[in-house]
Amino acid sequence: MSKSALARCFEESAQQDTSEPPARDGWNSKVEYFLAQVGFSVGLGNVWRFPYLCHQNGGGAFLLLYVLLMLVVGIPLFFLELAAGQAIRQGSIGVWKSISPKLAGIGYSSCVVCFFVALYYNVILAWSLFYLGNSFQYPLPWEQCPAQGNRTVKECEDSSPTTYFWYRTALNITDSIDDTGSFNPYITCCLLAAWTIVCLGMFKGIKTSVKVMYFSSIFPYVVLLCFLIRGLLLDGAFEGITHMFYPKLEIWGDMQVWRQAATQVFFALGLGFGSIIAYSSYNPKNNNCHRDAFTVSFINFLTSVLATLVVFAVLGFRAKGKVMECVVRCVSVKDRTHYILKLKSKAWFKDYSDKVSGTFTDCNIEKEMQKGVEGTGLAFIAFTEAMSQLPGSPFWSALFFLMLLNLGLSTMFGTMEGILAPLTDTFKTLARNKTKLTVFSCVIGFLIGLLFTQRCGNYFVTMFDDYSATLPLIIVVVFETFSVSWLYGADRFLDDIEAMLGWRPTVVYKYLWKYVCLLAMLGLLLASMIRMFINPPRYMAWDPKTASEVSLQYPGWALAVLSLLIIFAMLPVPLVFIHSILKDRAKPESRDAEIGQYSPVSTDDKCETPMTDMSELDRRNGTTAPGKGYNMPPLSVCYE
Image 1 (cartoon, rainbow, N blue to C red):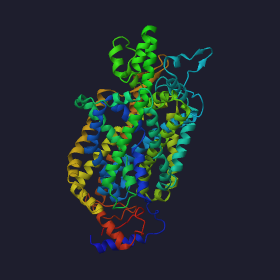
Image 2 (cartoon, rainbow, N blue to C red):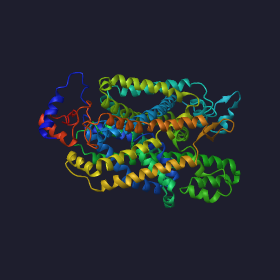
Image 3 (cartoon, rainbow, N blue to C red):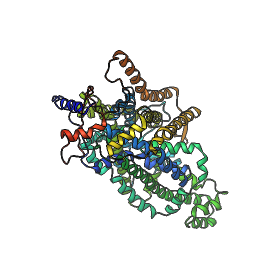
Image 4 (tube, helix red, strand yellow):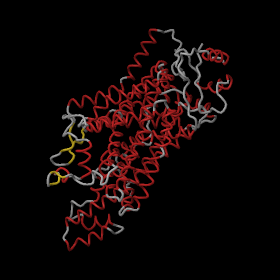
């Protein structure tokens, strides 16, 4: 197409009527964009998933493996999504539709997965709100077991005050997923509050959400630093951290560890959700997205390391206290002083293991360190118990759950943007009513989310967390990588990035995208599917008789539900593909005959623009206002 034709078509599109959707938003500064990307990628998983994996899989050796996979798989894929969104300035649906209309289903699948994740993720925010509200009292309600008459409640006595409060007071949980129980009124009210906060934060799109992120993205770091300083002053913290990071290089031979490390890299960066694409689409075309990919990825990694230091400094303090209590119960008065002095020494882990491992099997440090150190068990049981032992426990408790709330909010804003941006970019009616769409989405999210406020709701949260996102997101990223590197062409994509940035990224990315990343994601997909078939899906249920967790198999109907979650998430990919083929056969004379014509998709189906011409057209037509580099309006040009 000639430049004069592009210019004529641009003039026609500039004369659109007033019924067209408003111009696309843009970031007011690079700081806003950074806060949004970091806020989305740094979430609850950095605090309660990464430390657990690091501890279980070789400590320092796992860190090295994680960094390796982040460099060769995570950052290249992160850069791919950033560059695609920034170049085309559309959400996930528009980006993949511009490569080929047959691939638009990838974007729709991303939206479905984002919706599933938003449903249960906001329930975790509701739990955080519940605990935050209960933190403003002294003593904390989970510090002591409640009394029933003249006796302590046996279920609490057999477990712990924090465990009892979590399962019996906060969740009032049933014995299994089959027993649904009634709605929990406190959690229901907290869920309504959580969705209200999200709705208000997303009310005017990124213009309002980024104002909240100035606090929600920065505040967690302040809290983590406060906890780190306080944690390092606790008895046993330093030894706990040393024990945590001691490298066990033999784990590199375990393929299961590689799978867990790759999965953590994948989810930590938020690949496949469409949120990275949506946020980068608000950038100016000359933004250095290559540098952003490295910066955001390493901030994410350093946050995980910081959280790990905090978690195991505090858990080391907790474990040492538990072991000392155990020793007091098990040894005679004569030997008690000897062992307690040993436990107070600098080498308490080693000394204790050498001296008593053969005598007091119940007093096991490793066992104490591993109790409830993953997910909700870490946040609402183990860490909560450790904080209750600190002076001024209500203050530390309120600080911790306020941090969890802000971590979750930043991720929720990104997740919702991964839903709203692609839909408003694709459908003009929704673009003209974006505020109504936001409110409607939050209302629907709350109504469906009532499923998780039943007494069995925690089991459904586990189901959604384990199965609604993992396989679908891996498949989405496989399609993304294949579409860019093979269908569109890695060389063409690098050409477009060079035209956009003014310099060409290294050719190494071509081979990483075409072979390393694609094979790694296929391997991760295969390993996840094999693991699912070898080990049938199970969940941890609370048994009030033994006051402990038990592993149960999902019943048949629950297996059907989790299978439908995976199917619904991936269904848009084949449906859109088939629909596009049928549409092409019905209209063989369609102007979109060439597959892979990479161009920004406008809200008008008749108009598209080769992305390498956008900046030149901006300058020639004077559409970019001076000083508004982070608020560029989208262009719409047509093919002749």
